[in-house]
Amino acid sequence: MKLNKFNKTKILVIAGLTRNPLPIVKHLLTMFMGWRVKPAMTVWSIILFFSLGTFPAHSEEQATDLNVRELILDHVGDGYGWHITTFGHTPISIPLPIIVKGRESGWQVFSSAKFHHGHESYKGFSIAKGGDYKGKIVETLASGEEVRPWDFSLTKNAFALVLSSIVLIILILFCANWYKKRQGKPEEASPGGFIAFVEMVIMSVVDGVIKPCIGKNYKRYTPYLLTVFFFIIFNNLLGLIPIFPGGANVTGNIAVTCILALFTFVIVNIYGTKEYWKEIFWPDVPTWLKIPLPIMPAIELVGVFTKPFALMIRLFANILAGHAIVLGLTCMIFLTVSLGAAMNTGMSVLSIVMTIFIDCVELLVAYIQAYVFTMLSAVFIGLSQVEPHHVKN
Amino acid sequence: MSLLTPDPGLLFWMLVSFGIVFFVLAKYGFHIIVKMVDERKAYIDRSLESARQANERLKGIKEEGERILSEARDEQVRILKEANEIRTNIINKAKDQAHVETGKIMEEARVNIQKEKETAMREIHNQIAVLSIGIAEKILRKNLENKPAQVELVDKLIEEAQLN
Image 1 (spheres, rainbow over the protein chains, first blue to last red):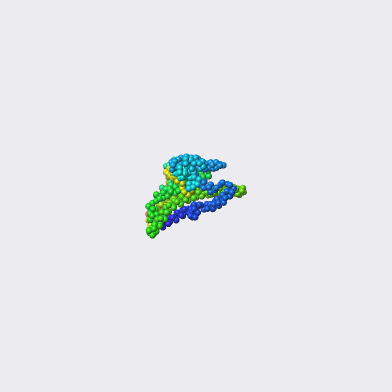
Image 2: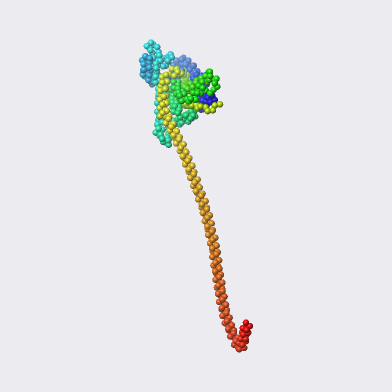
């Protein structure tokens, strides 16, 4: 029990104090404020909240058709085409493949351009305009009922994901290839330029995070944790670039972070030692805490699931919030048009300055979140490598 | 689309893409990079260690050289001292020998001188004797020119002889 307690404190301390005190604050905020968890974010979400609340009322009077809430949700969410801009009344977007298996029409593959930006239906499929499936593809059955088909479409996020995965693989394999050529000749294997930079990042993660968090068996988990780190930071940074192929909110999508957390969950529990499972189901605590009511085992078992769950929510919320702030600040320019030229100019300048500032913060957050995800994964893996206690008092 | 419900299609694509990225990078990417960096680290450590050893050996060699040098210096001092002693010895011996030799020569000289002196004295004696005899003869001759004197002499001589 003593060790267990110590371990838990260790997680909190590592999560909270090593270079990044944000997680603890975020945990507290998560409890009170739902998923809007960034400390800086809270201020801005309040501002955003007011702007959403007040300005549309003005704009309705001024007959502006800008709906900030819709706009932001549309941008941070997923989509069936990659919308770039709307020129006049013609939306310009990159069509993406739709892959669906309908209940009546079977497997269908076609371009998202067939929907004409959601205005038309194709082979019984259309994009729902409201209801439970708003924004998603629905199949209209012969009976007139709308059902959700099996939807494996390469959506905007999926497409960005595949694209960034390919680029990431190419980048890392390019570096690895450089080393492969010099295998057995360590005296020549000191790179310069880009490869040296990648090496520096890799080794800083290995020496600064993986080694101290896992301990002696760290080599086995290094490839996974490095993959996670590079995958997250690469997608985070791509998400900050506002134009194609960046700008997609990949790591701010809960499906993406869910799979990442799932991988960590599986690795933690598959490679967990016997002692790890013993500490969950028969921890070293007074017997009345275990029998007849298994209080401690229940808590420990819940902990097994909450750890990856926290990983999933933390990354998702941080990145989503970053995108939302940047979009909200940019929208300020268009929202204040109705307030007159002077006000609009002032607000535009303010908006640009703030956007630049937040973008810089987001660069930092992109790194920190990749770092924190990797570090916590490493800590959880390290905790599952429990050795039997030799000293029992 | 609700932000908080994961979309099955995206879950599928994420599983596939991340699975492939993980597989490829773990097998062909990071593994090699980390291994090579470790190898390089080991190589650098080895190089540093061998440099340290070489340095130590060099230090040893330097010390050895200094030791030999100081030994040679000691030897030099010793030899010089010895040579000095030998020289002093030789000089002393020579001096002694010279003394002895001089003594001998002096002795010989003295003996010779003595001999010469004696010879000379003898000759002088002889000469004196001859001279005295001559003188005596002349004196006698002169004294004995008259008869009484001759008789007187004879008497005297006989007296002397008788007395003897």
